[in-house]
Length: 245
Image (cartoon, rainbow, N blue to C red; front, side, top):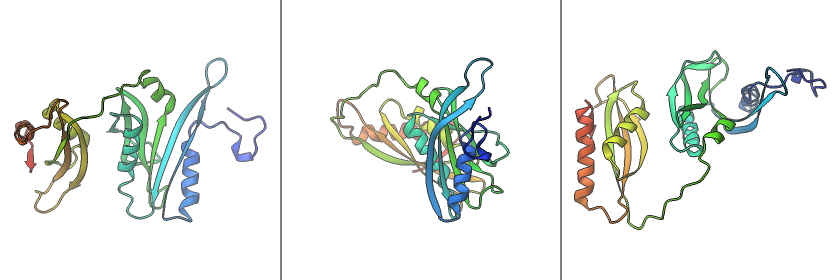
């Protein structure tokens, strides 16, 4: 859709995406800063068969590091999880401007609500991770009423487990397996780190998680915590995984 009276010659089209603007801002800032974060909330304009165009609010978040930018995707994944509790990230085929091995869809409540990716190395010097979310879809999936839980009266306990898995196995899949094995007393699970190298066998990785367990009516005993931990280990080993404890 063309603008009748554009403020600049190169701004005569209504935007279909926030990404071109985010990309230009990344290039401009990368000339002056080693690392930075930026975001924009704006509307995508899409033609309809009849009537006024459809205006879809989007959130675009970018994280740039000229050196050591490996953690960018992880940080933006955490942003998505904070905005949408239970959000998941699934690898997806890369678009031409995306890194071929660092592109994913963001899923929430069984719907694709956005995308998480890095710009292709030919497009940016350094590493630029981007999170793009359809805010209208996110809002439509959000529960109408907020649920609140009472403040916990009894302390929780945490322990760490490391799972040996294939190099390309998804952290999210391992986390789901641990959650299912832990049972109803699992309060939280947090990804900690990944490691490959000696003494881990070649072609495998160690993925570490911190699991927090608690009961609503009493403080868990050491025996109860040990039983939960043992159950998780036994179930993961039954599925063919080796655990480092």
